[in-house]
Amino acid sequence: MAQVEIYVGDGAKKILDVDRDLDHEFQTLSGIGDEAYLEDGAVFVHAAGVWVAIRLVRLDDPARYHKPLTDLARTVAGRL
Amino acid sequence: MRDRPALAALADLLRPLADLVAELPRPQRVAAEVVLLTRDSEETVDERVVGAATRSLLENALAAGRPVLVAVDDSPWLDRPSERALRFALRRVGPGLSTLVSCRTDTTSTLRIAPLGLDSGPARLTRLPLAPLGVGALHHLLRERVGATLSRSLLARIAREAAGNPLVAIEVTRAVQRAAPTARRPAPVRPRPEETTVRYLKLAATAAVVAVLTACGGNAEPAAAPPPPNEVTEPAPPIEETEATEPSAEAPAVDACALVTKADAEKLADTPLEDPVPVRETCTYSGPV
Image (tube, rainbow over all chains, first blue to last red; front, side, top):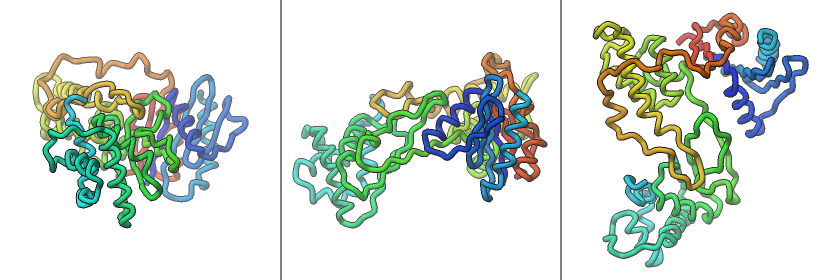
């Protein structure tokens, strides 16, 4: 099972805010866009005034996808 | 609220505990029997007594060693007397009671006050926000519950119109099936059959979504009464085309599917994925089904 969801705009920021309210653990990603945050199964990036959330649904160890999520956040920030 | 029978929800909730009613003190017993409709309701029943009876029944069940879970679906639509009685009881019942309450929020609201005063008591409250179902999940749901295997484009339209709400998606799909029994291909009617289907779809979805955009928590009335069932299940005849196929004025300038391509998504997921399904400002890549 695999699913990749991309949210652009206010909806992306909303997901980040909800996850923060739920005390999810975030890792700040420096050097990506204006700000970027990584959590298990998702990455959030803010660049050029636009928020983007990328969620990955996989059933194995979330830590395995931290680097791919970080790499994709960097790519997305460069495209914005 | 006026069209919802008073105390109907509480009666449903207390019915499994009806065998404990006889042990209640008389005022509470009378109130419980009125709620359960096992006694004439000529006798005036004070709301506080209904609340107290509710509390006593829950506590007595716990004291008897029964596992008790109070489950309330779509709490804003509780009839008000039931809501007040539950609010009263849940604040006072001691430890051991589990409560599961669901409510729907619109997509712009922040987390709100918990329904039924659940955030004001000593018990630990856990919030589980449930996001709208994506296209992939709706595909499985509709195949299992409706037996419908829809074309990708139709599934994407249903997902968009239902805003990820599974119940709305089911009703809309059933309406589409009635309008075009062979849902995988457009019905052979009038010059633009696909658009006719979309009109059915939009009308049915619009009627149903009204029920979704209700506030959560507090004592406020829901924003609108739920549509009568026939509005959802019986689509009206086709109407003139609406803005359904017109681009939204609020569409984001950034295309989510262009921002993260299929190759990007497959690299991230480390597995092949199907073609993207864009829905408003989102894009979803799902694994093969």
